[in-house]
Length: 364
Image (cartoon, rainbow, N blue to C red):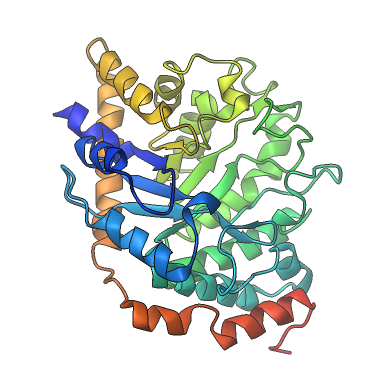
């Protein structure tokens, strides 16, 4: 029975603007929990709406809705093109120092996501921008001070929740000091645990209190804290710090497990096992179509020889994901596309985005 539950722990990418027959078969046969959308999957509001409907029409073993996720932070990380509202980078919100604007920003973005059937955003990014040379993060971060990052991140989280969008804080414990890009290489940080606790972990404490649904791990090695493993594979970070010390009860999701920071250093069959053993609840596979099937097979093979702790963790992760879907997705009705059209690029959203981008607080 446990091998039938495994797929709910996966979020996977798909190839195009509609599902292929092989993709439909893979998603249903393996009880996959979610689909993540990228530019290659996004053509127009109606096409996105139809794709999300197509995904949700599939029947899986657990008979729960799919998570349909996307990277929509604003600024450079903005998958949805016009006529969707084009939102500025969240650094603009921090510069205006307004939690009410941040709340309206994410609530309005969430309304447009929900209108086409997307129900999860990999946002907010709460990395603290401590290194001016860090081009990977830059204005994706609310700023250099943990208090403003906490304040804006919390408001963004609450706005997404208000619009029925699952939230995901990233990149735990912090990607703001790196120069290396984990898409291509493994960043190694020399910061100690005391500094990390007093600075990078502060926004996570705040967002956990704000009921953030997911936290995404960073593919970074903090050599003073865990000299052997990057965070995604580190029991010290995921279980000891995030689950036990910070008391996060939500879902811990890996960053994309095909990124070179991971793939250059580990065998593809070992990667999902290491992430789960460290305490990850959900595994993200974005761009390599063969990887999810290999990962599933690897975990199934492991189950035959696994200790009770490993099996118990999978049971617990599955239970958390199913509970979240029952609590937050099952009750959300699809919006007719005729209504969706009136919400996408709504004039109130366009005005809000324009004001924030121009450094204007319309509430003053």
